[in-house]
Structure formats: structure tokens, C-alpha cells
Length: 344
Image (cartoon, rainbow, N blue to C red; front, side, top):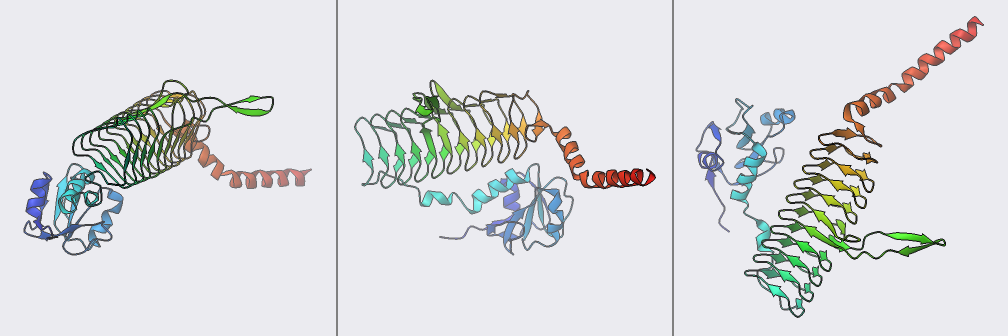
């Protein structure tokens, strides 16, 4: 493969950035700010790492508008993370394209009445069950299982070892990473005379357009109706989403979070890592729940909460400070107690 070479002047033009320094410097690759070497370009988005501008081996840095100057050429942008993503696409155009299937592999198993769109890729040992529908330009990688009556939209990427169970609906431009299971049985039981009897889960899962789901995620089908993931939502690895959960558009669900049955999340909700949500609660639009928090009741829109059970974040931070001071308080109380005892 012929290496890609661009001058800083060309890169600045491509990302609509302001170049400060020598525009003739030639760039051949991208890298992290600590790892970058001569000939590579990197980026700085967080001002906390500003000192790395003086130590990075990169030939140039994409920065925010807040950086006025640096010991090497910089390209100032409104959003360095977004701008650098464009730079990556210049020097490392989708490397995954080289390994994604571009046709239907001879070992794939296609049941009757399968509907296939244009320009699709089906990898080795993929199983497409009866009456499944695959949209145009969708790619399904090795060992994936697509259940009967499942519909997958256009431009999707289904990575190896993904399972999408029967009657599921997947929108356009959805990405599902390896090991994830869509439409597994909801966790429903009723205790009858000391025995846990299974409650049938007869609903489905609907995933709207532009959703990305990480690896080893479980999204259970509904008992009745749908478990629904809203448009543009991004789900990290190792997340559990139970039956009948509704997640609004453009939400972020971070790793090791568990959402219990029939909970509802509004739009633009962020659940940080290891958040636990009980069933049947409503989390309002634009709410942020901090890491390792426990949501035991509904939360109004626009809240920022933390703790278990959750509290407004400032209340929880204040409580944390008080807890940290308990040893000092204990010592002071003991000294006062000793003084009082001596007086007696």
C-alpha cells in the first residue's frame, strides 16, 4: 500500500482549521499525543494535558481555539476531537473494510424466504433464518445468527458472533459488536408454592437508526410489546437492558450498567459506568447519572445525580466530604469526652 502523505496546509484545509506554523511540514500518520513521533500528527482536546505540547514527538498538533501558540505547528479548531477524527479518516481510511465480507460466503446458511438487499456481505457460517430481511449495504460477519422474521436495515454492521433473535427490528446504520445478544428472553418468573415458574416473554426488540451497541451486551425482548432503543443512542460493552425498557434518542449507556424491566429513559440521558436502575422508573430528558449510582426512584428531567440511592450531585459530594472528615470528628469527640471525664 502506498503511504499517504499530506502537508499541514492541506490537512488544515480539509478540517477547516487555522494553521499556526510551517504549512509545508509533511505528515504520514496519526497517533496519540504521548505515542506520536516525527512525521505524525496528534491532537490535544483536554487543557489538563497542555504540558504535553512541550514533550510530544509529533510534528504537529490539532488543538482547540484556546491554544494561541506552541513549540511546534498547530492547527486550531472549534472541536479538536471531531477535527482529529477527520484526520484519522485521511490517513487510516476504514481499516475494517479490508476484513469485512463483501459477498455471500459459501458456508453461510440461508433459510427459505430470506430477503437480501443490494451490495451486502455475509461472512462464513452466518445463519439467516426463515423470512429474515437484510437491507442494502449491510454487512454481517462470521458466525452471526439472525433469527426468523428479523428485519435489519440499510448500512448496518453486524460483527462476529452476534445473535439477533426472532422478530427483532434493527434500523439503518446500526453497529452491533461481537458477542452481543439482541432479543434474548426477558428475566421473568413467578413464585408458585416455592417454585420459580417462567413467565413467557412474547414481545420483541426494536433498535432505531444510528444506534451503536458494544460487545457482550444483552438486550432482552419484551414480555409484551417492545424493548426499544432510541435513534442515535450509544451503548458501551457489558451492558444489560431488561425486558420492556425504553431508551430515548441520543442517550449514552456506559459499561457494566444494568437497567431493570420497564424502566424508561428520556432523550439525551447519560448513565455512567456501573449504574444500576430499578424497574418501572422514569429518568427524564437530559439527565446525567454518575458512576456506580443506584437509581431507585424516578428522576426529573435535567437532573445531575450521584450516589446510591441517587441524590443531587452537590448533596452527594457534600456528604462525601463529611464522611472523609469522620475520623477527625471522632478524634475531637473522644478528646472532649476524655476532658469531661477528667473533670468529673
